[in-house]
Image 1: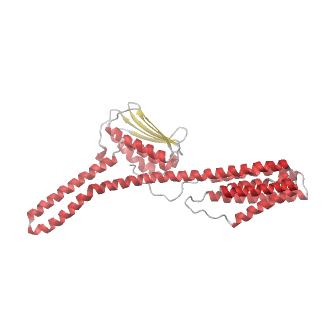
Image 2 (image 1 turned 180 degrees about the vertical axis):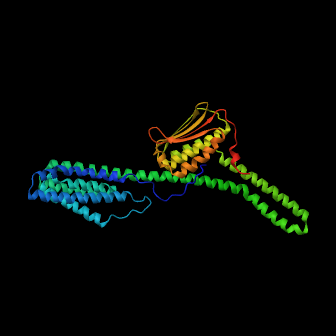
Image 3 (image 1 turned 180 degrees about the horizontal axis):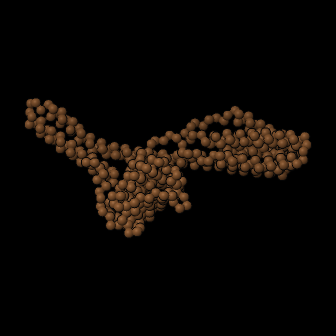
Length: 397
């Protein structure tokens, strides 16, 4: 198990670049360029009022989309807050301005309805979104068919507004789903470590519960006999010593088994954890047989590498490779995540220190470096003519 600890987390994973997401929302403002440019190049009182209306629509659109962006940044565990009254007032104003500008300026000034579709697409749930787009289509039909008698513009709006709303809605859903998956990955890693701690606690209880109870009873009995029957008391003390030594041996054996993982078990555990976290995993193993000390060391390396992948990398794929290299054995854990910059200093300092110490006992080296094309590469190499140091020698006597 890696040396560092995994602390329970209640915070969400780092937010994606929401400024970039907001800027994509603002791209729809390009629809306003042709009518505004036409109004500026042909100044008149009517066009001046249309330009002022366009400025108001732009300001409303910028504010409401930013409010939607802040909504997407909310903590995933927080209760969903109702939409603010300001948002509703500004959206109603945008719709009214779109109606007035369409009636006064003609079909080229109906773009506020496209903006409204983009705003509601990023905020409403599907059922409410259907009603909102239906209302916008009805107003678009009134302007185009009743006022302007322009069937082609009506068909254009009939197609464009649902497309814009669905595109923005899907993008917002993808952002929220991605954040939920990243949070789930962190939780899976935390639960895996917690489960391992609970298993070890259960093992210690099973090993020591009976023995410590025996020591307590015999200590009490020896205290009662020490004055009346010293010989019997000495016998009880001897049995207490024997029980204590047995308990000490059991603890040493348990810790040794706990701290020395098997390679097959670590590979199976890595597959299970990475798959549960939504990370595709591939394993390539060339040597079918390895020295027992090398297997244990490689098991440690895989556990360390997979823990870092789960906790820090945000990777989509992890490759574990065991093979030969330069007259020795090597194991590599490679991911396509965010790289070494995402590892906290405690991980680089503490997590690899114990692994490097174990490798040094066998003449091996540990390397942590950025991978070609992005991601992180953790590798360990030991010579083939390796001595067989016991990893359990680290357990104090």
